Length: 246
Image 1 (cartoon, rainbow, N blue to C red):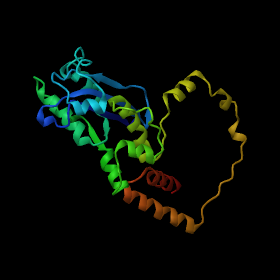
Image 2: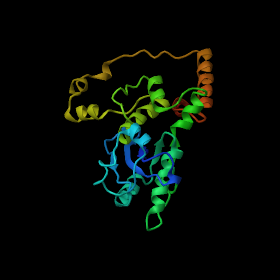
Image 3: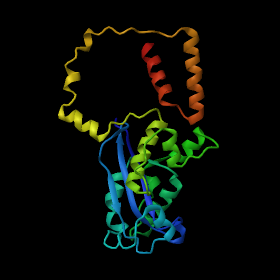
Image 4: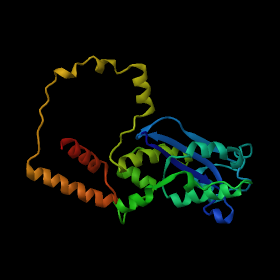
């Protein structure tokens, strides 16, 4: 069964939805089985109110730019259909989910809350467990994982969602997503040179660990599981391998 995840970010008129602040941009990228699909969702929205000056300094989106953009009510049905059934990956989910639910509550017909249609994974909470006492904002995580975000002069929902997708994949076991360029190259047949190789003729040595090395590996996986407060991908693979070997 395909695992569908949506990495989501929003930009807003201010910091607090309880003070009437609204969403002005929603950006989402889709991952299926940890690979980028290119099936993104991106909308700028007219918030029907002024944007705080401090918020404009963060994302650079002006009131004038949003005047002809759709209202949240105009895109809500399409958004909910896109998100439905997925696991949402959000950095500081309390903020974005709070704003999304506040927008849903404004609709004339009572809508489901985001938690009713999606499961939610907060990468900020995960990062705090993995790197306690350190800075865990998105820029700091990019630096930690050596992800190039030099093109990010201002915040933007779609750009930040794309960056967070890279961060999340590194945080959960390594960068395994195919870039859109790599996927396109495969579709064009640019990898035919590799396809001509007869791998059945290759003889590769298999070096098995001794008992001490195997025990050290098990202990290392246990420490990693404890750090992420879950079973890491390497522990899952190790369990599958041991089950197959039985």
